Length: 253
Image 1: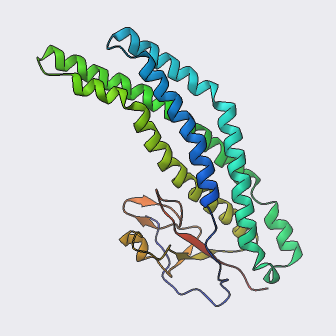
Image 2 (image 1 turned 135 degrees about the horizontal axis):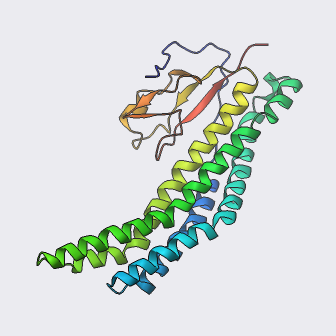
Image 3 (image 1 turned 60 degrees about the vertical axis):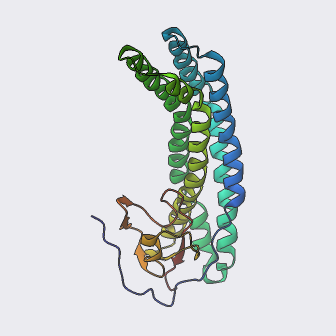
């Protein structure tokens, strides 16, 4: 299991403000909400309690997932562009400590990382209608079993009609989590390109910070060994609903 280094960072660490990700989160949340609304319309407009309607819903949602792939890739590309601008602003204040050569190296370092992020996000965005299809199928089967055993199935049918609402809730979580995860990945790619070996973990410093993350505040973390917190492994900002960020430690010239 990866072990987080507990040694104090050297004075070569560069204090930074947390990246402003609110705009990116709002933009992504708005885009993903469109998927949730389309999912809700498909389910609510088609489900009548029959097996045929469930088969039709699943087919339409699966086709919809394929249809949105180019759109999902465009959304991810726009997100990356927004995050790069936010990351640029974070680095601008420390640019006096980085030579021109290192800045050029940093700027060209993230191509492979960006492609990987986009591929992962496209799969994640497409999972919204696919998971909705599986949800409808599963709850419908539970409703059938309830009827066979003499139990009421009305509540289960109501749950099927809530599929759009459930999808929208998941879309909000994805928006919050993916923005932070992608932002940290971009920061890591740029930082390691200029020789950074780690960062200082910083939290949002408010009452909503979870206990395990509050304990990480001020700790030095090697990029190569992300910590495991609450059963999940990742760097600051890469956990679900995490608002922590990396205060990068740069090498001395």
